[in-house]
Length: 271
Image 1 (cartoon, helix red, strand yellow):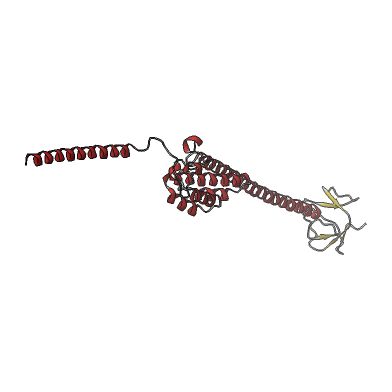
Image 2 (cartoon, rainbow, N blue to C red; image 1 turned 45 degrees about the vertical axis):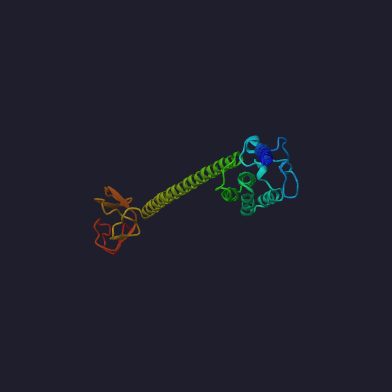
């Protein structure tokens, strides 16, 4: 019986030691698992391609000094998707580009937003270079809801300056047209006044000529010579009368006021 008890005691002690050893081993395994692999490995993409390789040639916002030059966080990039997003942005399909970028992640979204804004800025600058302000405005409006970039802000500033210059030119043209119309109205007014003055002068000259041709009023009783009815007396030229006015032969057709027809035959101052 004593031997049986000794055996049971030895077996129990060995089992406790084994259990304790197992607990120690499990604890070590957990510690290693939690601390992770001390040797870093490249992150792998969908087809075993390192994600870091997919970002070759991309510039981060901090490096480029402009938000969204390209993908900033390579861990969120998928090579085919970002390539498709870039292609869509370059083709002007901004909605498709943004949809693809959103499916990749925030960093890709920021990068594509910047790419679109810069592309819109370049399109606007080209339009301004050829004098097409409307096309420049349309290009910028397409990216107006996206975060601005330096290039986009510069294009907006250039567009505002071009619009201001155009507005100033239109204002100057309106002023010039108004000045021309005022000058034309003044010229027409002066011409009308000159025409009226010339007409008055011509009428006065004609009246003076007519008056000069008609001469003074003649006495209605005598024809053949014009006797001034205001004269106090007429005598025949070469006679013995003392005037003060003299006349040649006349025909008496009315009262012989100046007594020129002494024999009453209707002929006065007969020689």
